[in-house]
Length: 173
Image (cartoon, rainbow, N blue to C red):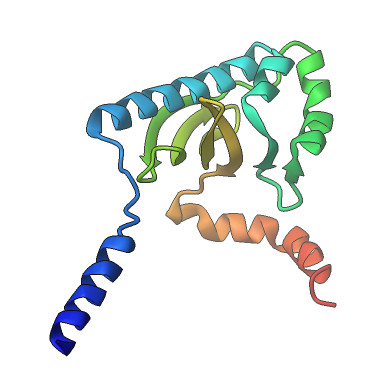
């Protein structure tokens, strides 16, 4: 009788804990990646066309933009304030994706990506996170980085040394 009770308890535990997350199929993954790529391409195009409202409508209300400078970590309001003068003159910036990788979580509601961009600064890397909100993909987090060929790292270190030292002094209290 004890063996039967143990088996019943184990079966009950295993079936009641069957909280498996429903995964999306390959067709939905491809569809989501296409939608996300269109969101990002349109977002970059809206900057190039100085379409301020459309550009910022691609961001979630609590989005974060991390720029190339160590001090550039902005919420949406701060990023709007920084960006507005650039949009007001007719062209904010022109970034064109030349390569992009998109990844999705198992439910298809969260995505992360990395992209190489052709920009006025040369080749840059963008990376970030998007979330499906009210059936629309919104950018939650974006990081823009200037790429540095490994052969040039020592030169960049030398150029940045003084400013990096001043920046770090604020953290060494």
